[in-house]
Length: 123
Image (cartoon, rainbow, N blue to C red; front, top):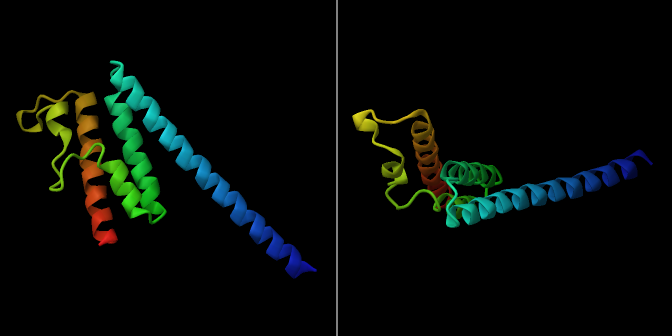
């Protein structure tokens, strides 16, 4: 009797976890879509878009979906050698970064590092 209840509970837990993962993926995808749309119509949401991509990439990498993480991260990391859109957010060497630009640059740098990690894991 206990064993049957335990197996049912494990099955229900697995189903609930899969539903949760589906909702998380859907939420990240919606966030990226909304930010992308806002950017296309002229809103300044670049930092939010980059953060959403980085966080979704992190989530996918934690799920061992390295290909998916690479796809998402490649939206903000623009080349195979890890070159990023850092030029878009200021020039760190000249010290002319404001706090927002510094934060964006850090997100891009973190995304490049995560993408490199994911590529190693995938290969």
